[in-house]
Length: 231
Image 1 (cartoon, rainbow, N blue to C red):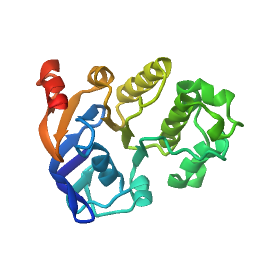
Image 2: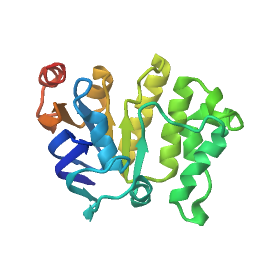
Image 3: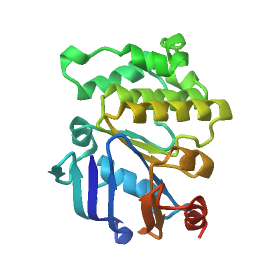
């Protein structure tokens, strides 16, 4: 579903990513790991269009994409759940979900039942303002809002950060369910090692803006991956 070839990214004169080449397959979870500051979020921003890459290719479902802004990447089927969630605090839960309609034709401007089946708490809180939800509930809302757009590629940046254990478990179950459906590729950036290792089908470990190691879970031992993310 996603192929990156020699992707680079700068913030001003500072280069952050150096020649990143990787793949994320449909029906799989690709986990991007590494210590703080190695470029994980920058990589997700480059793919989502929220920060333009400096060079390299992004190929989505066989189509080579130019350097597109975030809203055009969303139209192409890329959904981004950012670190910190970034829901609209003054909009209700339902209104937050409806913002995802911008990527869909008018005939699909409705909230599928599956959204509330995956996140039952959101059905109960449809009329509450997003800012009144707990951190875990906001994270569920951010993921649900992304799913409204019916993505082909789902990008999740630190979905467990600051979240209580029972919500982490539920988010893991949702990711498994989405993988089982097999109609999207999922790229997960995650610091919580056990959560990530349990879910991942393949790993990409970054170090100083470069790929230190990558491969299928069947090719890399748990100790190899753990050592890579703690170097």
